Length: 288
Image (cartoon, rainbow, N blue to C red; front, side):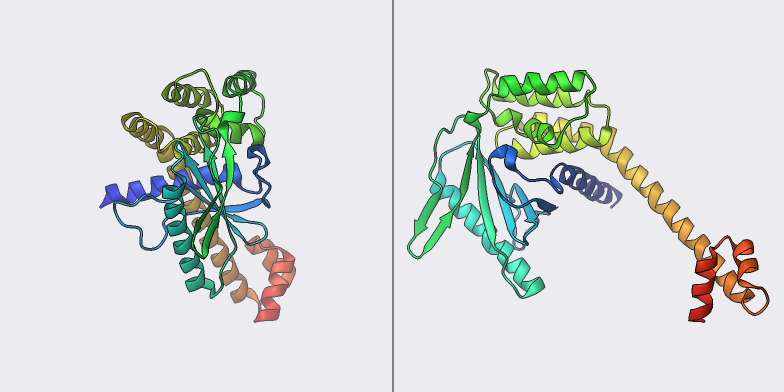
């Protein structure tokens, strides 16, 4: 039972960490002109069967619309569109059940460097599916790798654009073998001082390359993350939550003591004895 709990917490930490890359950011670096991202949404959509793949990334945008961002390494557009249609229906169903309303949904597909062109519209009779395509063949992965490598080696603060480029480095046009650039990108990220940034970027790379990364390598990286980063961050969050709970208990004790002293001492004396501010004591007296 405990193992399941740890696994769930690890996934939760990874998700929150990866979300930090995109929060309050636009995707202009990918050539996508959508409103800024408010938050990343879990892709555990209704009716996901054990053998079904989940959506790669789902975002809530500033205007209330939803962005479905997918990563593909093939040109099987029609086949892929069936998958996106399924995701879209499930998103609509979830939102309708929660809000009785339908959000506007955008579909963007990021293609690896092997794909130079692909249809962005597929028609099934009266059903038309449009998507925006981003071709990583237009990005020079070798020069971008050297650029971010230099910034990391010089201990420079990475911009949001730098981080988004790092996540997609393995998808870009590069002279390296795809698996090699994945491994080199992850090893490069390990030199970043911030453990939170390391975790966020490696989780982002694993998500972007999920369809073609070597599974054994991906498993090893996830295990390494869990042992060295996720567990540590989870413990820190747990300790922080415990400390916050203790503070809340102490505050309630102060408030209770202040209430008992209301008919005996002045506001100033109660504040002095309890450590509450005069404003807090006065507010407590008014509500009594």
